[in-house]
Image (cartoon, rainbow, N blue to C red; front, side, top):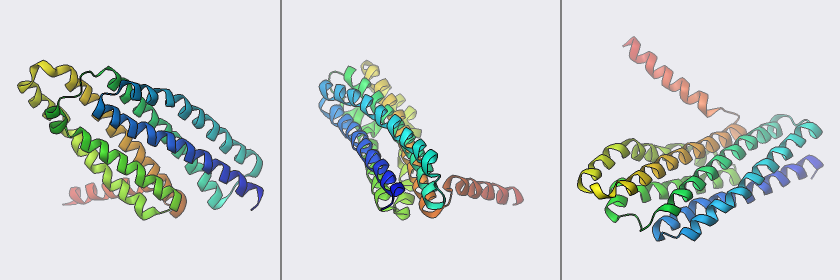
Length: 232
């Protein structure tokens, strides 16, 4: 293993350590939601500082790679992808921390009907699954699994799109519980953003493994579909 390979491995190890923390933040947030555990929510918030420290450290390590080794081809694509994966992980951690701040203030536990109608737990489970799958795709350089994550995001978008309608209906039957309803709306909005950042990571995995930029491919497909409709 040459010096460049050793440095790339060091970066990968740091990313995995950061990912452990972000995984904890998301999972602990759901646990705090289910148990109304304010202390656990505080731990999620506290771990945010460590996530930010990893973010800065990984950025600097990548900058050193550019300065010292002038990477090309596969190595260059990998480092560019890591910079974006790192930024998206940091944002996921930020949203998980924001959710924890909300949960710290929720007392008593969220009303069961509100949880069921909003599909909040379903959304939490889907977010965790996406993050777990995209991590596996990263470790295995599995672009097929990364593309599955892109499809899984549709569920989060679907639940998020119906949130206002669902909560308005809940308000009418539970006018005394507007406070919790607003909290649920905020959490759903942040989980939807977590899904977006997770799909960004999936796109970067496809980019450095297959050298294809998924974002532009998806835009081309949409534009092509629009053009065909116009022609029709």
